[in-house]
Image 1 (spheres, one colour):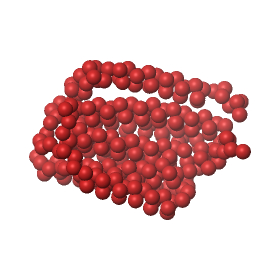
Image 2 (cartoon, each protein chain N blue to C red):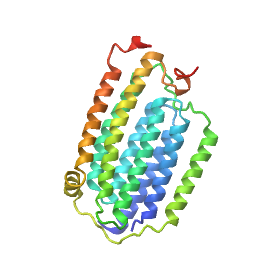
Image 3 (cartoon, chains in turn green, brown):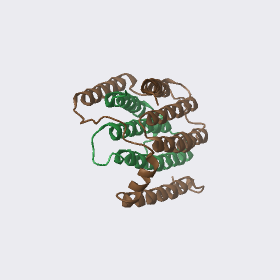
Image 4 (cartoon, rainbow over the protein chains, first blue to last red):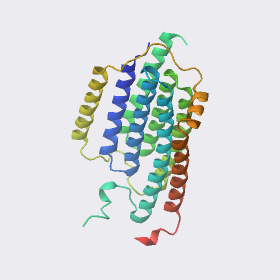
Length: 103
Length: 168
């Protein structure tokens, strides 16, 4: 029998890996990969809670997960369009070199 | 499904997900990182199935493993002269310590809290239930999500449209 704690541990490890990737990459697309992993771990938590935790309408967790996936898709489309647009201007997507707004 | 089979499937899928997520962190080529990311997404979709969320699992495969990863591969291929090197990281050691500590805190809180669990499998076919929930209590967020998607699509098209180069 799967317990809620197993899901929470897997999601926490996935979130840590995603956080490490999002903070340490210098390539903007790599950062986006880390963010997507973090969103996945949060969805995993929502699904786990919907499955195991007492609530008046248990399907809510899955509906929230669907909304999170929707917003993640919109966010990925805009972020990758930004990366391609920045690459056209600077020939690079290295976030350490993006100092356009810095004096 | 048999109970032990579900548990074994859960552990195997969790191992696939976490190992491919780690490979995203350590692999050197960005394209390989995207491929391991797709494997991780599919592992998460399998985990959803073991948690009796079949509709969300299908949505995960369609949107994450299908759409978002194709977008990422295109973005990697459209930025060829930038560092394809996925190993270009800054502050790797302190950040791994930070991420590990945060993960340990989340695991501790998750294991220490009383979550008021209930026994038994509560979901049959979830697609119909999700559809009804989207149209009755969540009708307004549903419509707002469609507006967000349209705005994001128009924004992405305008951002990558040719003719934006001379602004800088």
